[in-house]
Length: 206
Image 1: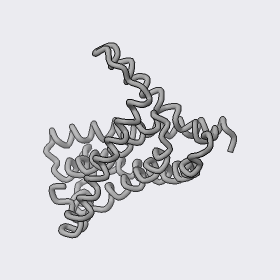
Image 2: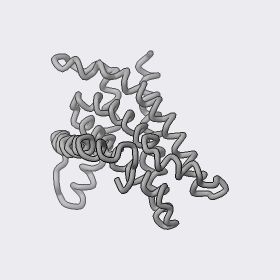
Image 3: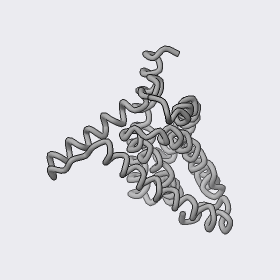
Image 4: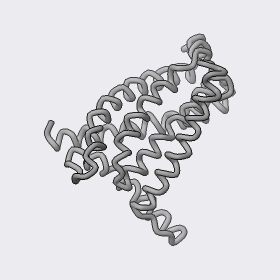
């Protein structure tokens, strides 16, 4: 694959991610809260907890940390599980009549995000080699993944500098990313050791 084609594919992936992993779920979360749709709102709460690894990944990539290529792949896999793992939510969502706009929109988003996450899993998985070459400079096929996160980080730096006079550097992004990754790991470990053995595939009030 040529560098130009890869760059176009990666940027398309980031643009789709903004819509499918941030904008639409935020709209659905607020909509379901206003309509008091418990099943949809619980699904969205779980989704936000799980998908926060994507935000961690963006911070790590902005800091040029190679582990971000691994967390990107794991994040796509966990999003798939978050969407379909829960037996009780699957049943409740399946019983919702599609003539209701919220139920229909949720189903469209859920399936669209499923296909996006599968594609993202394949694409990010192809970049796992970037993690292994820690003693060598990143190849162009690796650095292309860092372009969008670095621009995002620069935007954060501009806002923080304007509002508070604070400096936000790539090191700041790395530190925030590692702190977030540590907190995420603790939460995931707690769920696997405590909640999963007790509740299994029931979402409950997770």
